[in-house]
Amino acid sequence: YEDHWSSNDFYLDDAKAYSVNFQYGKDDLRDFKFDRKYVLCVNGNLPVQDFIKTGNVIYDSLTGITWQARYSDFKRNWFDAERYCENLDLDGKRNWRLPHIRELLSIADTDRYEPAVDSTFSMSSDLYWSATEIEEHSQVWVVDFGYGDDDWRPKSFFFYKPKAYVRCVSD
Image 1 (cartoon, helix red, strand yellow):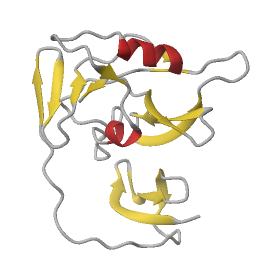
Image 2 (cartoon, rainbow, N blue to C red):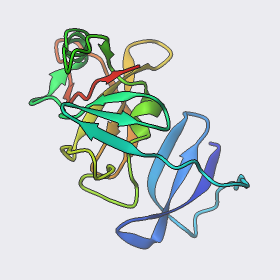
Image 3 (spheres, rainbow, N blue to C red):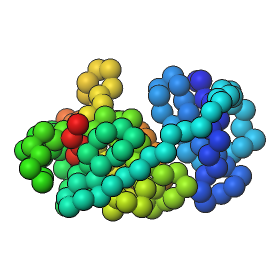
């Protein structure tokens, strides 16, 4: 494993912090600070992210992405989530899609929990689908907005199709 510490403390416990696993591209939650992990130092300031809500959409001034202001009313399987975004028509925009995992993580706020999201967004503290598939295309990345953690889930498992919420984006 290539686990590296982040500078973010875990919101509920100062004895724990977030780390990133570069082997899988996954952030790990709630690791004890006395665990041994690699360190990667950085220099500089992060750009300021500003979300502007107008009508049924939220514009991200940093990425240029427009978000659906309200998440889906109920959970859907991944295939239905993709169709939901493709058929969405909000404020005259028709080019909606599922967000990539990094786009979905960009609205997470690990200083908050349940939901771990910027206060501009109303979200359920639950799993949300991304469009980012794992190598073999049978699994996709999800974000759990309870704590802002990412993970992966199967698109389908035999006859079972897992469900999660959807929040669409438009370029």
